[in-house]
Structures are given as C-alpha cells and as structure tokens.
Image (cartoon, rainbow over all chains, first blue to last red; front, side, top):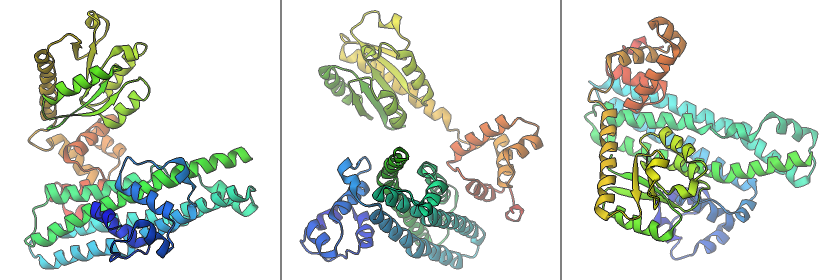
Length: 234
Length: 197
C-alpha cells in the first residue's frame, strides 16, 4: 500500500475516503482492505482508474455493486463541500483582508470563486438528489427483474444519457479562474498566499477530474448496460 | 509549438519501425500512435489531434478522401502519404509524399518543411495584441450580460459574426465562461465593476 501512495500522492485523500488511514507500515493492499472491510476489487479498480487515465475497467470488474460506487462518490462529494471548497475560500478571504490597494481585484476573484462554488454545489446536489437515486433504482430493477410502480416513476423520470456531458461547464469555470489568476492578474503583495491558492486550485481540478473519471468510466458504462437490460426486459 | 505529434498508419511492421527511427532524428516530436489497420484510425485522429499523419494509402484505398477531410477538419494536421507506388502523387492529394526508396535526408527535409509550416501557422494564430478593438467591443457587451442576439442587434451585425468573434475571443484569452470573460473585461477596464448586474 505504501508503494501505491509513493507512486501517486493524489491517492491520499482517496484512500482516506475509504476509511484507510496512513501509517500502515508494510501491509499489502489486500491486508488493509480486509482489515477495513473495503471491497478489494472495487478498491483496485478505483485506484487504477485514478492513477492511469487510459485505464478502462475490464468487464468482470464491472460487477461491483452501484451501491458501493455511489457511497464512495458521496464521500468524495462531501469532502469537496466540507473541506476543499471552504479551504480555498478561506484563503481568498484572507488575501482580501491582507490587501489594501488591489482589494477591488481580489473581490472579483472572490465573487468568481463564489459563483464557481455555487455551481459545483448545485451540480453535486443534482447528482445526489436525482442521479444517484436513479442509479440505485435501476440496479434494484435489474436485480429483482420486475419494475414496481414506485421504481417505474423514478426510472422514467431520468435517463443516464442526459447525464453524460454535465461535467463540462463546471470544469470550464475552474479553468477560467486559474487562467485569469495566472495570465491576467497582477499578483498581490502577499505572493505566498496567492501562489498557494493557485496550487490548491490545480489540485482541486485534478481531484475533480479523477472523480469525474470514476463516474464516466465506471458508473456510466454500467448504467448504460443496465438500462439496456431493462429495455430488453420490457 | 514545441512538440509535434505524429500518427503513423502503416501495415508493415518493418516500415513502421524504420520510420520511427528516422523520426527520432527530427527532434521535438513524438509518435503518439502507430496503427496497422484502417479500423479506428479516424477515431484516434479525433481524440489525439496529431499535427502530422503519415499514412500508407493501401490501408485505406476506399476512403482516402474521407481521411483527407478529417485531416482538414483538425486544426494543423498535415497528411503525408508513404508508399512504394511511383504514381502516388498523381493518385492522391496530400501535403507531402514519401517513397519507400527515399533516402534519409530527403525524408527528414520533407518533414522539416512541414514542421516549419506548422510552427509559422501556430505563431500567426497568436498575435501580440491579445484581442482586437472590435473584439474588445464585443467582449464588453458579453460581459454586460447581453445574449448573442442582443449584441448582434445592437451592433448591426449577424448572430453568426458575433459567434465567430466570441470563438476568437475565447481562443485568444483562454477563457470560456461568461463570468470569466466578465472578470477579464473589468481587469482591463472595458467595463466598470458596478456596471455588472
């Protein structure tokens, strides 16, 4: 497990979301998964998808229950909402207090970030309130083989195809914020803080793109397959 | 453009390897994919967006024109035909031709020329002045929250023109979202902060 982290430090928050803490000595991935009751198969698939952007899970790995994936994604969401986003916000506020002459520009950044944050939050809420329940319903239908009235309502209210390109807009804004800070803004006096914010934005972007990859490469193909199954069932 | 990306589509393993070795001498380039059959080539062109495609037409006899069109669609993608057919130049339209019997110097100078073309083209795309006066004016209206239609009506131009300007502005500045463009406009005093809703 230590090797995994040495190879890609961006995985630290990922394993933490699984409830795995650092300080595991020389234990193997398998040992730790057994200890923390994490599905080894799912863990491996996830880590590989994070680490290698061309990795495409083989069909047998598609067997992981959507429930586990959704649980994981929800944990990721809460870490964005409760940790990452507020962390950057606090730093931007700090920057604003530290400056006097450039205050106006910092305010611009702050407003822009605020807008971004709201958009991301909205996107996450949409996933939690619409997409995830849909995913779970579809899985249930596939499992029991009949569409109950309650499930039918949810099933017919949404289709995974509508979900596919929802990620782009949110990513765009984050990219713009970075571009503006790098290319067009004269850095304020407190460069240290300013740089730190930019670095955090980069890390957030990377983490989000990993996150999106799980949704697009693991959850999405699974859903498409299950939707097809249900259509054939009817 | 520091790094030229190349896709090689050639059925013969030996020729592929040989090309690879020659291309290494060109410097600053990267063979991003080698393909030995026709299937999937167009898809990989679309995802990899290479600068140069070196292609053996035997692979594609039936739809080489289609491929030509794909190359044109991609920005800055040159098509190079490689074959042992002496009449290749007469049969196909491409940016350059290589023959199996060509010497190394000839191959290199041919590719160097393409590379230079690509680089000048790239430079022309980015002017010193980030955006033109006309674009600034459009940007100002975008930042004020006007839609394409509203901008078109106000400036007496077609929506199509507005869309083109928008595309150019976005490309030059590297900013896509309206709120990002608004921030840029304020930073460059195109509009005042209190003008924004």
